[in-house]
Amino acid sequence: MGMKTVKENYNFLVLGDSISRGIIYSEEKGKYVPIKESYVGLIQNKLKGTVNNVAKFGNTLLRGMERLQKELIKNKPDVVFIEFGGNDCDFNWQEVAENPDAEHEPKTNFDVFKTQLKVLIRNLESMNIIPALMTLPPLDPDRYFKWISHGNEEMGKNILKWLGSVSKIYWWQEKYNSAILNVAEETKTKLIDVRSAFLDYPDFRKLICIDGIHPNESGHKVIANKIYEYIKVNYPYLLKENIIE
Image (cartoon, rainbow, N blue to C red):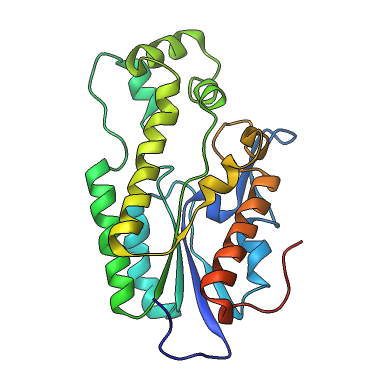
């Protein structure tokens, strides 16, 4: 879909989790820190208008949708960037480690994630707002497994007992990414395929932090360029003439 009218300036809203918030893990500082040159920081000066970033560390789709209602009234966006799934598909790994024989549910049920993502897109379209839907960057299952088990042999053993294999971590996240692809197809929503941009690299792990899941500075550059490409092809009137180098 497109705008009904072309304007001088547009309002952009970024709705997502820590990736959109621009959070990376700093090995030097030993903690998560925000970076200035996040993908939002890189792309905002290329857009005609104002970018409001309401992404939050730990956000799930349902939490983001709750926040969106207030932001629609406050910011009246023309475009909403939607970046969810990484937390939605995640589990409480401490609980898994403590009871590996029990059943454990992800933070957002798979069917709920898919259904509510369609609801979100339909609602935005009904208000003539462009939904800019993003796929998930791939994770590194080996580094992520080491991260969630805190390098603790016993904890890792219990988590692995429940998982079956470390590769299941990648498969499970891929399942939620496939939901995003399916929703885009069902709703005829143009997609910002971040995942394919990462997988185009010979070793995408170089674009991921030591935790195995957060894109690093180079990863944010890849995301920014993918967004620029998406807008240039589909909505060029939203861009200034500069290109991200």
